[in-house]
Length: 370
Image (cartoon, rainbow, N blue to C red; front, side):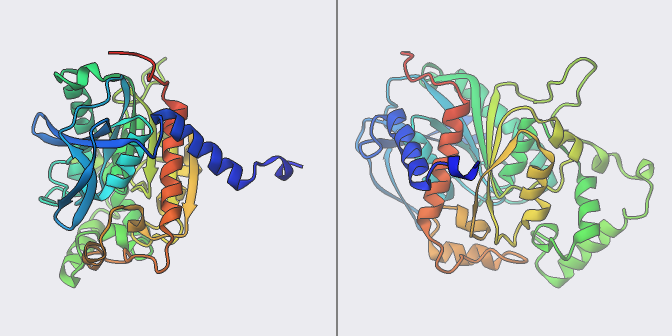
């Protein structure tokens, strides 16, 4: 009987599309503005609804249809902070950012220090520590900005994280991770999850050095290990009588695409209270789902799967030119190539579900005038 009550997929798709259309007036007429600000030392790309006419803009091999430095629509909006993957940038997530903007959101895309396309020197645990603080830094900067402070209501902020951006999102939702968790995970399943465990160590020599480094901690009692690998980062440890574990209480909803997650403790995932939605990729070889996305869904009671795509890891990025896709895939230890025949409409539908999730969980403010 329960299956008979489920809405037809076409009905669900129509309702999702209608919600997005209502949120921004008309998706067909919505224009996308793009500008840049600084949040301290962090460059931030802003993507937002505007009335200015957009035109194609080339940024390297990417082409974006935006109106540069246009004035935002004169309404107060909700903010989504979008955290890119390791070695990433704003442009490869632009399609999702513009989809959110067409639904009425303002999107801030920080370029994470030491873990971006220009500089990946801190990729991994060093950047995992700083990414959540950079999101808070962005929100604080926007609250004081001469233009954006009047256009944003920041008591409820959404976050989206892709891949390593999943660490950003989960940490801000309240989960905790340790470098030791990474080491223990990779000592157990290094070959099964080699795309993650040997990220950035594709050569045989680099792989052997990484493996030897992890094995040194395998049989050492935790009390004798260096403090820096035992330290927990992310959500705050609950105090007596206080179950609030978010490091920034303004974060009210989080979505994730193919997130890094094996480094988080099961206990802290169980403590997450705010809604978290996941887009997963069943063919992901870069971050094997059973160790990452499925691990979150198993242990986090407030987390839900939005869609499971027949896709590989980087199929979640758009625009994603073929030359860029192949270059990035060649740098991976395993996986990462575009999925042959992958239907881009499935990704569009997944992005629509991300929009729907944030529309549902962030209180609307479109009626409020600045």
